[in-house]
Length: 306
Image 1 (cartoon, rainbow, N blue to C red):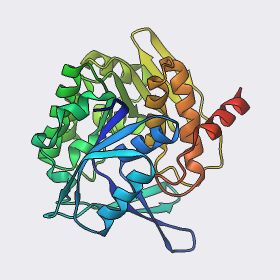
Image 2 (cartoon, rainbow, N blue to C red; image 1 turned 90 degrees about the vertical axis):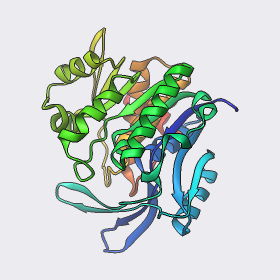
Image 3 (cartoon, rainbow, N blue to C red; image 1 turned 180 degrees about the vertical axis):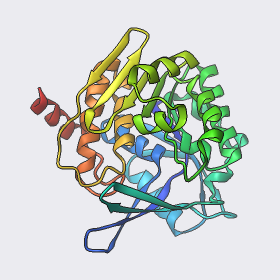
């Protein structure tokens, strides 16, 4: 199988995003799909691993993946379950997600669905806490994919992406920490770290996750930017000021850009700065995928910051 930069595993979703005029804008999302598309828009290659239902939403998601040049050989059709949906609403405190994904096709993924050749073809395997939270067998599939990746010498990228509506912190923490311990690149957020580990200081968050076994920890801090923590210490990357309208996919834009730059051979600090700019640009439009930037836009933003 041809090599790709990123193989992502998780649940693609059909999106309905509430607009200021009250109408709903249709689109697509799902954190790991967003990561794969973000990477491809920046010049990388990617493939996706999931199950989809046999419905119109699955058809549109497959068409999206084809348009975005995402490999779909490992996307399995499951006629016995629906494709997941989610709604995005906006208020004074930011965006709110409402899901209709219980019993979805992706939640029924099992380790036997995995093709070791697909996993071994990647420079990075990417999964997340959401990939684990959608179902017990889905969590087992993430663990099996990580084991395959490590055996094949594929680097593991993991995003804690904790969603309390999917599972409570006490159940999530040991599952997420087990994956975090295997990660070459571990991305988390200040909100996730507070909810899962009871930690707020970036240095303490980094020490905890490095202590589990993660090789490098990237902590997104909202408008304050990003903290990068490795065995060599902590680096702070300032936030990028933009007139944000919707931060739905910002974290995923960050991760996709980070992996794309690392796959191109950039060092972690430079890749983090690039990803920080890409994430900021992704907040300038509505939806998780539509605003994901192209390389020329990120390069221009970097030049302006410099």
